[in-house]
Length: 319
Ligand SMILES: NC(=O)c1ccc[n+]([C@@H]2O[C@H](COP(=O)([O-])OP(=O)(O)OC[C@H]3O[C@@H](n4cnc5c(N)ncnc54)[C@H](OP(=O)(O)O)[C@@H]3O)[C@@H](O)[C@H]2O)c1
Image (cartoon, rainbow, N blue to C red; front, side):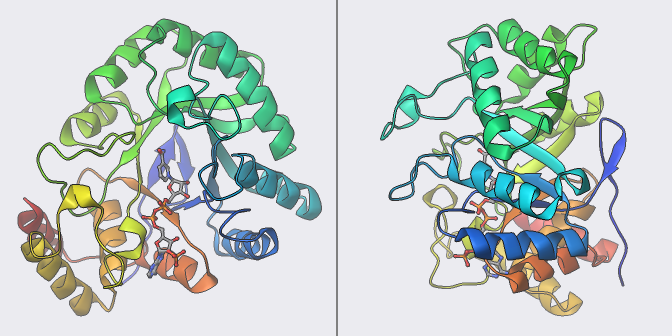
């Protein structure tokens, strides 16, 4: 059975799947990335996620690559108007070869300069969503929120958002927004498996129940990254991120997932996507892909209806 889950951003409907482009222009060569973007646009996967630091950690990478790859696609295919474009600022190293400890951060000045550079690389005059990439405690939240709101006032962004933010900081930021536009989305780490208590996921922050509740009660779209655990649900050669323990530790949850997947004609990674988009507190997944088959599998998954008893069994098994 198929149907389309409903997600909205600032009141407007968005597709039930976001295409992550973190490796486009580095691990995924530009031409291959452009073909994948073409296929995504044809399917309706028109919500694209990038950042101004993808993928600086790749050998020879600078952090320009993903945005530059998208900019070239927009300009050669005239596709900018067909997509919802989200980028992120704040977590770009301050100098070539630097790491996150030198990140440019989220001061008013840093945001303004980083967005100008992003728009240049993206070859567009505005983005649809601008995220604060990683919470920056060295700057007053009011300053960050005001600088992001200023981008909306200047027509450089349609909506502001945050990533890797706790529930209390999200609530604080919503208050700081005052009468102006507040964060329309929060993008944190979230998948079917629950991390071990006290797991170190830094610089990522979990989309825990607290964040989901603040988002739900404030009309903020809850978005998840790192959903497929880099393919570990279906590929035995891919270890789980250490924060989740090993497969033995997660055996109950993984067995439930395999059972539901088999019943519904999906693989385990697809079952995660179907569960995430159809659970009562639905979450919009951002997925990474490197070939058309992976893209099509993800799109099929978010359109496959899980019976209520399967959703309940999955929820029970992950507790
Ligand atoms: N806000 C943040 O801080 C943050 C952090 C991380 C990521 N993100 C966003 O989230 C996106 C996704 O992140 P991600 O790539 O780390 O995580 P992911 O979605 O968990 O993993 C993606 C990888 O899983 C594998 N995969 C995908 N479909 C598959 C399938 N059907 N069967 C088997 N393997 C499959 C692919 O690996 P291969 O390519 O090796 O085949 C793919 O590159 C990024 O592009 C980025 O936009 C945001």
